[in-house]
Image 1 (cartoon, rainbow, N blue to C red):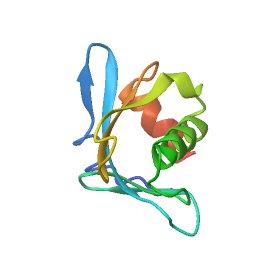
Image 2 (tube, rainbow, N blue to C red):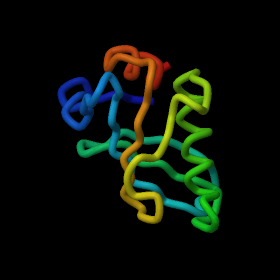
Image 3 (cartoon, rainbow, N blue to C red):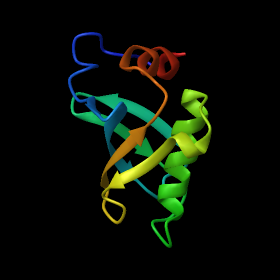
Length: 102
């Protein structure tokens, strides 16, 4: 995944030792994938937006990509929206970018 050095940290926020990341979700995609945009992450998810399936798929995708337990990742805003804010525990911003890029 190509990480744009100039813009990559502008959308990350800290709150109570937790990293807040805006994510735009595209459910019912052909595959699960993450992309970095200027205003946040873009997540393409194969899961439909029904009964929280897309939220669970997003959590699993981020936790897997960041090599974290799923309990360290949760949707804190936008549970029923395409625009979400995900809270990530246990990572600094530098470590977030390092793991996301590898």
